[in-house]
Image 1: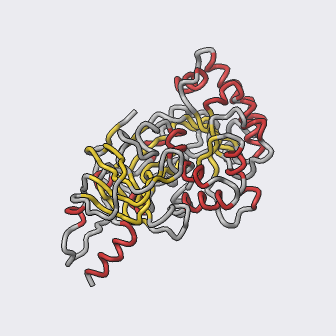
Image 2: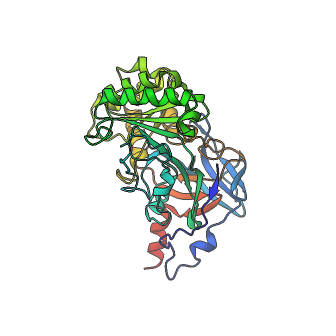
Image 3: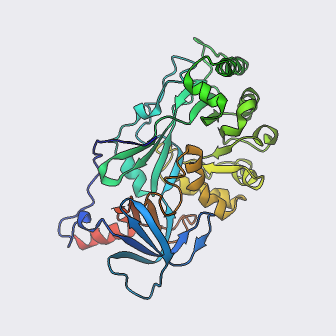
Length: 388
């Protein structure tokens, strides 16, 4: 479901007095010429010209770098990747997603918690994050529907989905003294009752859609034991369940092997090697893995940090690049719109000075819908110097 939000998001101006041309005058280009382009399999091609048709990618074709391309933004040493996708973000919704009055709240919508004017949207863009999945807080065993949003530069945000995936949660935050469930055992029993009712045509339509296999779900699990409980309770529907779990997945192969995918992260430098190697182990086992940044609770660079750490601890570089672009888009159900540099997809492109897995690589520019919405760190520094 695609729904345009008609409000205007107020972004901090990137124009400086004394600059020869305003950023707005420079923001639209029919094409980009770049030294390398990330392919669908997570590897890189050689130099390419990415042409836009309105907000979408029109074509991607080989291009020579030793010639000038009129009307194109040219980054001869740049690396073009799809806009990064944070599959478990709190941008614009931090502190507004918690509603724990009801243990089962399938009707809740995370989209209602998002402040579309929040400056965090611009901060995410400045770090190359153009798409995000915002989930309800994991304080209800059935927490409601996640929202998938895409930053639209200086013109607002676009809601790509406001109807899912459906979110289940297991862990200490779910168990309450003043309402069910009060324990992990009670949570498992409650979920079995809920899904049994849904199979009989009772309960919220989202739960019925889930058991029929027409609605995917996220199962947010705090501990390995929570993963086991969730997998057992949802065992008849694991093919369309993505687990969100980081602390330790090495001993969970039996529970996880039938799952749709797993979301791991954010990963940090102070985590154990056992935790940091989990994404690589699952990827090698054939499970689709996405990495989460959970910004702004973590830094806006947390996606790239997580990907770099996952590679350091065993994940292939190609899979790590996919884990912050195409795999999150697939989990979120919007892979036909974002997540890869493919003709027909939105023209959301980030130009890095090198492989984004290198944490010293800088962002040269960010494009959303074929329009340059952020000039990147290098260009911003140059503009500031010119205005002194």
